Length: 279
Image (cartoon, rainbow, N blue to C red; front, side, top):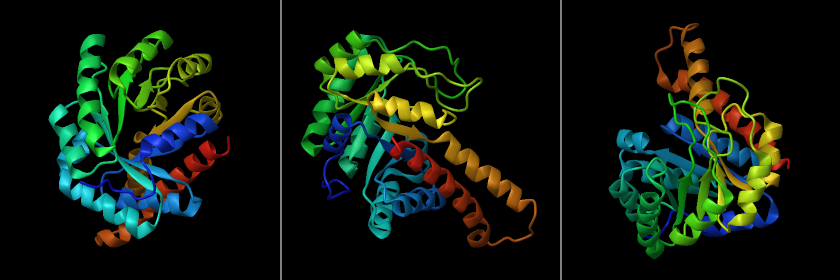
């Protein structure tokens, strides 16, 4: 099956980012309103974007419908964008996304022992090769929602060995970020990012950017981060605006109340795009 885009492979684009010290914003979407928000922001900014779907979103929408929605939206908005599966822990679902035409998948076996993480990641890299799809994996401990935000940092030598043994294109690294909102202002380990970047040819990915100050994001890009994930802030911004609007109106037409929240989420993504593009 053909991939969703005709403007080049994501793995090549990420390698180019690594050479040039640039990064793509990767934004999760959940429905029409949020895909509208992120792609409208991308179009207005003239900036490429990675669309992401988590396992829970894929179960909610269905893989086929989600893929068709992304394909149609990318075409309609006329933007440079790729479709990526985020945090795939189910090997069968990851393979189903590749079969359906995703440009990129993440196999996340980071909570398993190193050797098992290698084995599972290598299996997906092999499966994805026939599709020329980008494969991302994770190494280290990047806290997920509701988990303890204590860090277990990715080590450069371990990252080098992991990439050599798996052949993975992109690597999500534990360098001080966490998923969800932070209990205190995060401090990215910038020197560690630079060391990992020098140790491996893989494109480095920063998960959990919601709430990280823009100056830290820009500094991380300069040191080798090529992809920055954004999810929690999109949901939070959308829902806060929607709840506030619903509290002030008796309107029941979804087509009139949702755009207010969509516009607020679009503004957020525009701000993020400006922040990471002004490196």
